[in-house]
Amino acid sequence: MIHFIQLIRPINLFIIGLTMYGLGWYLEGVSDYSEGAGLMSIEFALLVFSTIMIAAAGNIINDYFDVKADRINKPERLIIGKFVKRRVAIAAHWTINFFAFGIALYLSWKLDTFWYLFIHLFSINLLWYHSVYLKRKFLIGNVLIALLTALVPIIVGFYFHDTQNISIQNPKPFPIEGDNFILLLSFGLAGFAFLLNLAREIIKDIEDIKGDIKINARTLPIVLGTAKSKVISALILSTAIISSGVLFSFFTAIEPKVLFPILISALFILTCLLLLPKAQSKSQLKIINNGIKLAMIAGLISPLYWKLLLIYG
Image (cartoon, rainbow, N blue to C red; front, side, top):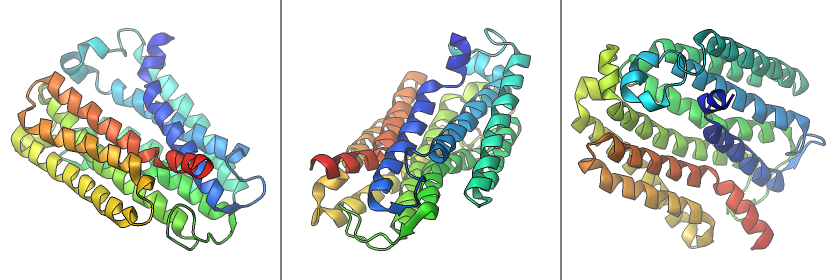
């Protein structure tokens, strides 16, 4: 059982749940949502749970098709075929996805929209196709995984946007008015997550280049080389940190403490940018990988901080 839990990456799943509830908690406080449709509703809990289930199933199928490469890249983390039988892994993958899709059907019926049905079905199939085929292709696999990560705040934004009754007026502590604030905030966080995860996926490919060559993959580092891949990652990270700087400058004159977690995220990104050019070993690349993950976490849990700021000042 412990090895199966490791297979689904519980820390990553916890971060997804924390991100969704943190954003939901903040949005609940700045919108007048329909009765029974707030943060504590069964529908929102099911939305979070089904998203986590799809991510867990995606982790399983990713490792299922990566056994050959992982024997070279991460032999110490190899689980499928060593601790968990392959047939058990594939059965768990489909069972988890079946229940997640069932929840999507319920949410689409209950909330009178096909959005949840579409996004769940899209994510399930894309994660499968990515693991089987796209992961080994030039850049497209990295982009699609980054897009799936970006969907996490977007689905929360759509949930609260669709269930609110009255337009938002100046949602503190932001100087923005109108009911589109929810979607603007959600897509802003999504864009931030997309950039950071895209850079992280490229750096992971640099880290795993030996095993990927063994399975005839055509990842960015294999096609362009590690030096050019680092430059591309640095450009993506620079875009993220410049975006953070623009946001920080915009809000400083009004409420500078609002973007404290974004500033922390920017510092993590800057540290990664300084370490990246000289990083050669897997351990050095791993440090950068973890630094980007911390930057992404700091950015995505910003709404949780904003909510606490509203409560405690």
